[in-house]
Image (cartoon, rainbow, N blue to C red; front, side, top):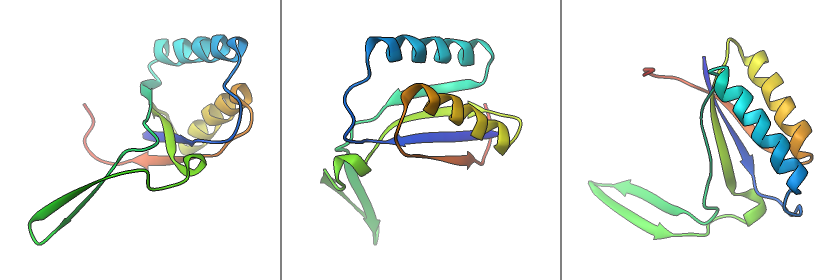
Length: 110
Protein backbone atom coordinates (compact mmCIF):
# COMPACT_ATOMS: atom_id res chain seq x y z
CA UNK A 1 0.00 0.00 0.00
CA UNK A 2 1.30 3.45 -0.86
CA UNK A 3 0.58 6.53 1.20
CA UNK A 4 1.22 10.22 0.58
CA UNK A 5 2.15 12.02 3.77
CA UNK A 6 2.11 15.82 3.68
CA UNK A 7 2.93 18.56 6.15
CA UNK A 8 1.62 22.08 6.35
CA UNK A 9 3.68 25.20 6.90
CA UNK A 10 3.61 26.83 10.26
CA UNK A 11 4.91 29.61 12.40
CA UNK A 12 7.66 27.54 14.01
CA UNK A 13 11.31 28.54 13.89
CA UNK A 14 13.52 26.72 11.37
CA UNK A 15 14.73 23.32 12.62
CA UNK A 16 18.05 23.14 14.46
CA UNK A 17 21.11 21.36 13.06
CA UNK A 18 20.41 18.50 15.49
CA UNK A 19 16.89 18.09 14.08
CA UNK A 20 18.27 18.18 10.52
CA UNK A 21 20.77 15.45 11.40
CA UNK A 22 18.12 13.28 13.09
CA UNK A 23 15.77 13.72 10.11
CA UNK A 24 18.57 12.85 7.65
CA UNK A 25 19.23 9.63 9.57
CA UNK A 26 15.50 8.79 9.57
CA UNK A 27 15.24 9.44 5.81
CA UNK A 28 18.33 7.27 5.17
CA UNK A 29 16.89 4.44 7.28
CA UNK A 30 13.53 4.60 5.48
CA UNK A 31 15.21 4.72 2.06
CA UNK A 32 17.44 1.70 2.81
CA UNK A 33 14.38 -0.23 4.02
CA UNK A 34 12.57 0.51 0.74
CA UNK A 35 9.75 2.27 2.57
CA UNK A 36 10.48 5.84 1.42
CA UNK A 37 9.76 6.13 -2.31
CA UNK A 38 10.09 9.93 -2.68
CA UNK A 39 10.29 13.01 -0.49
CA UNK A 40 10.66 16.73 -0.98
CA UNK A 41 9.73 20.26 -0.09
CA UNK A 42 7.06 22.22 -1.92
CA UNK A 43 6.80 25.89 -2.85
CA UNK A 44 4.06 27.22 -0.55
CA UNK A 45 2.97 29.77 -3.19
CA UNK A 46 2.29 27.48 -6.17
CA UNK A 47 -0.01 27.89 -9.15
CA UNK A 48 -3.76 27.32 -9.34
CA UNK A 49 -5.04 25.41 -12.38
CA UNK A 50 -8.67 25.30 -13.46
CA UNK A 51 -10.19 23.72 -16.55
CA UNK A 52 -13.64 24.35 -17.97
CA UNK A 53 -15.15 24.04 -21.43
CA UNK A 54 -11.86 22.85 -22.93
CA UNK A 55 -9.98 25.90 -21.66
CA UNK A 56 -7.34 25.88 -18.94
CA UNK A 57 -6.58 28.87 -16.71
CA UNK A 58 -3.35 29.23 -14.71
CA UNK A 59 -3.32 31.71 -11.82
CA UNK A 60 -0.30 32.63 -9.69
CA UNK A 61 -0.55 32.09 -5.92
CA UNK A 62 -0.49 32.39 -3.03
CA UNK A 63 -3.91 30.90 -2.34
CA UNK A 64 -3.72 30.06 1.33
CA UNK A 65 -1.98 31.43 4.36
CA UNK A 66 1.57 30.10 4.54
CA UNK A 67 0.75 28.14 7.68
CA UNK A 68 -2.03 26.33 5.78
CA UNK A 69 -0.03 25.54 2.62
CA UNK A 70 1.36 22.05 2.07
CA UNK A 71 5.14 22.50 2.22
CA UNK A 72 6.54 18.97 2.15
CA UNK A 73 5.64 15.43 1.20
CA UNK A 74 6.78 11.84 1.52
CA UNK A 75 5.53 8.97 -0.62
CA UNK A 76 5.90 5.72 1.30
CA UNK A 77 5.23 2.02 0.84
CA UNK A 78 3.66 0.50 3.96
CA UNK A 79 1.93 -2.78 4.76
CA UNK A 80 -1.06 -1.03 6.34
CA UNK A 81 -2.56 2.28 7.33
CA UNK A 82 -1.44 1.59 10.90
CA UNK A 83 2.17 1.24 9.74
CA UNK A 84 1.87 4.58 7.90
CA UNK A 85 0.57 6.17 11.10
CA UNK A 86 3.51 4.74 13.06
CA UNK A 87 6.00 6.13 10.52
CA UNK A 88 4.26 9.49 10.77
CA UNK A 89 4.49 9.29 14.55
CA UNK A 90 8.28 8.83 14.24
CA UNK A 91 8.49 11.82 11.86
CA UNK A 92 6.55 14.11 14.21
CA UNK A 93 8.61 12.96 17.19
CA UNK A 94 11.66 14.35 15.36
CA UNK A 95 10.04 17.53 14.01
CA UNK A 96 7.93 18.43 17.02
CA UNK A 97 4.71 20.34 16.52
CA UNK A 98 2.83 20.71 13.27
CA UNK A 99 0.02 19.43 11.13
CA UNK A 100 -0.26 17.15 8.12
CA UNK A 101 -2.22 14.43 6.38
CA UNK A 102 -1.85 10.79 5.39
CA UNK A 103 -3.69 9.69 2.26
CA UNK A 104 -3.65 6.26 0.62
CA UNK A 105 -2.53 6.40 -3.01
CA UNK A 106 -4.56 4.31 -5.45
CA UNK A 107 -3.56 3.33 -8.97
CA UNK A 108 -0.86 1.46 -10.82
CA UNK A 109 2.50 1.00 -9.17
CA UNK A 110 5.85 1.11 -10.97
